[in-house]
Image (tube, rainbow, N blue to C red):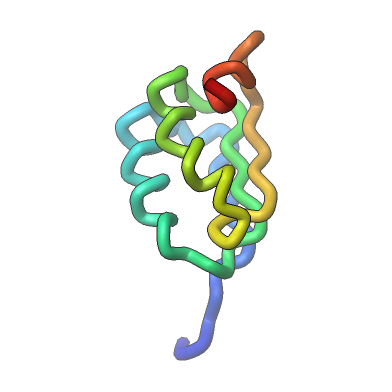
Length: 79
């Protein structure tokens, strides 16, 4: 449908790993409509989270990102 925008993407518990996270992050780089991305309970490690770090600092791409992080994994995004 023309004019349809992706506002919310829920990928909780979908077995997303680092490779998929990197592909997803790259595909979202020019997305200006996504407001929420949920990635809880997946197999993403530091490498996968780093792929999202540029998106997290560019609020025009993703306004809210909900990641269920492993202990201390917030450090990966801020490093």
